[in-house]
Length: 110
Image (cartoon, rainbow, N blue to C red):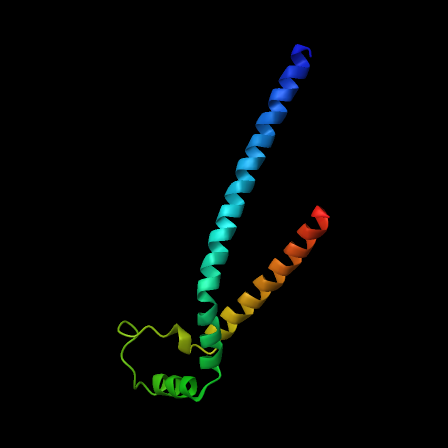
C-alpha cells in the first residue's frame, strides 16, 4: 500500500470512528429519552382523562371566577383551554414520527 492509499485509509478509519461515536451518543440519548417517556406515560393518560372530566371544568370555572390562589401560589397551565390538548397532540405527532422512523430503519436493515 503506498503512502496515498495509507492516508486515505487512515482518513476513512477516523471518519468511521467519528460516525460510530455519533451513533453511540445518539442511541444513548434516545434510550434515556425513551426511558423518561415510559416513566411519564401514566401522566399523559391522567392528563387526558383530567382534561375531559368534570373536575377540569370545575377547576377552570373556579379559576375564571377568581376563586383560586394567585398564579404565583398555584401555577395552572393545566387549566389553559389548549395546554393539555397541545401536549397530547405533540405526543401523537412524535409517536407517529417514531413509528415512521422505526419502519424506515427496519426496512434499511433487511
